[in-house]
Length: 122
Picture 1 (cartoon, rainbow, N blue to C red):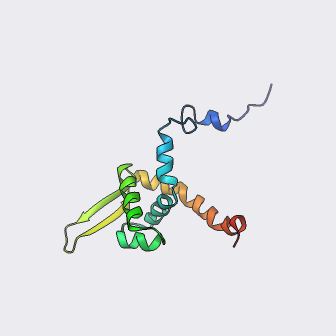
Picture 2 (tube, one colour):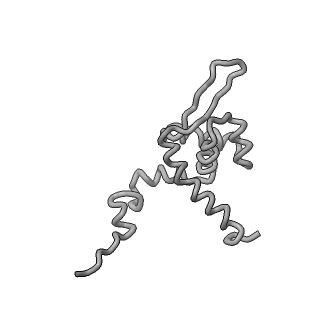
Picture 3 (cartoon, rainbow, N blue to C red):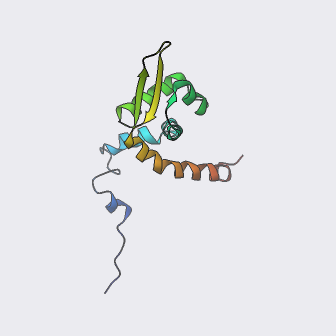
């Protein structure tokens, strides 16, 4: 009896991820951009305001933060809640789907943090 072989990486994603026309490619662009990753992981610590997110993701422009938040909200990963106060206040938080995604992104970001200097150099 021959040992059972594990499915190849291509067999693990039948009809998805690798084909050029796959919708997963669009979602990968949204969530795996450097700003998408940083915003999603930042929100694991709870709801935050625009200014908090901008401080955490150092170097992000106002335009890019707005675009990233809008995209992640449209994807159902981030919730935007406008508070009924003056001056206006908006809080951003992860949806349950966003929490699920961020849970697998945190170890990736931890790995990148541990290995970036050795790989890229200083």
